[in-house]
Length: 377
Image (tube, rainbow, N blue to C red; front, top):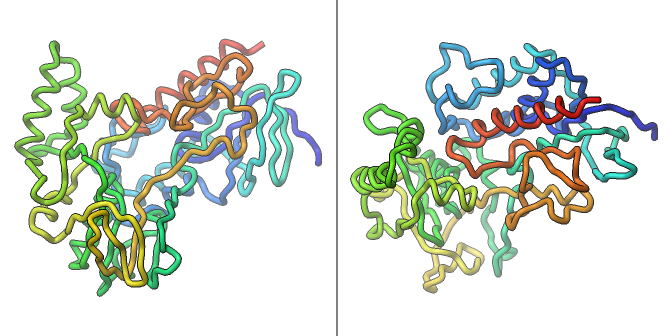
């Protein structure tokens, strides 16, 4: 197989890869971008129908091109896809589609990239495959005996296939909460299995974005902003313990910065739980043919189980020799790798900052391109 020698290779044509490519174009830096699927921003084409960004549009666009004025504050999935496709056209970004990376390794000062179609040698490799690359699929005792269907949330589109069914959603992150809301609004019998305490915040209060408010509160001295946020959550969300949900005592901002896990952004799920249109059950320990057994030995029948159990980045699948490169969650530690990993960059992985992953993509793409510009010889 022939080897193509290039300066800069971007792996992934989702929003992270597009952000770097857009900055490269503005700086007249040569690059190529490869994508394992057949579409720009493939995942966004296939997310559930009702999905809206939880972050405001002014903090969610890619570099050098704002969202159209007519877009609503929280951009819906279909319009976001159109924006990403327009972004690629606007900057003349032309990914090579249907090329999947098999390995990335460093030899003699260059990165060697093996794919199923073409091999490359590059001075710089920008990994833009993101933290949501591979669905996480836990396995429970007796799962193979379950007579119903088990699907990952990635395969959920809308409530229509679930009409008349009894559904269990495992996991109440943002996706699990919103899928439960969607099902309940279609009068579907839905329960959520929760195994730990939760941090829940409203998306808006009195028409004002909590995201924007939180940024302002974070700047207040003496922890005053966090205290105000806690009082607001007590009033708006309230004590959910009688519904089966324990509220975490951690501050949402600290939790995000320490673990990379965002709080649950409530769009109406809490109201449905309080009205008992969504039932909350505990952690499950096993399946039986007609349903699940909970940690308290209760057995519940279900027709369909939806795993809202998240994703994994799994960059170890294709990057060789990751010693010192990843943190305890197997996420890249740095945007700009150094030492033996110099020339390797990561965008779309830093979920530890206030503002959402799309906001960090804008900042991290600038960090990457600035570093590459400094080292051009």
